[in-house]
Image 1 (cartoon, rainbow, N blue to C red):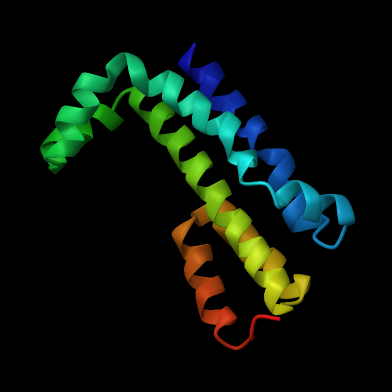
Image 2: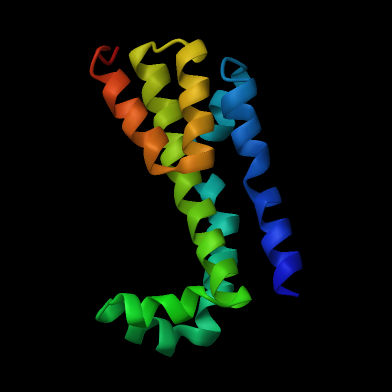
Length: 139
């Protein structure tokens, strides 16, 4: 069950990443990505996955330590919840990167690889965009 959810969860975000990376100038892409609700389906999946174990999760994250967090992530359930968490937040950050790049006039030749980096390595793509955006003024 967890393996199926893990594998299928990417399908909730893949269309949005495809639009932002491969079709950044398409009018439909701009309209779709303008909505912050694109992250809602994967965020809802996260909530559905985390709610059954919420007391244990809250106990671990309210006083975080490696000893408390490692057991949560070291199971198929924990890895799936973490993966869906990454998918939701990376999409939301990717959406911001896409919109900010367009507002600043950053060419898709530069923003699309940064979006791909955000998809693959979240914070690394965000950092790359932050470094690049400093050279461009918002319109």
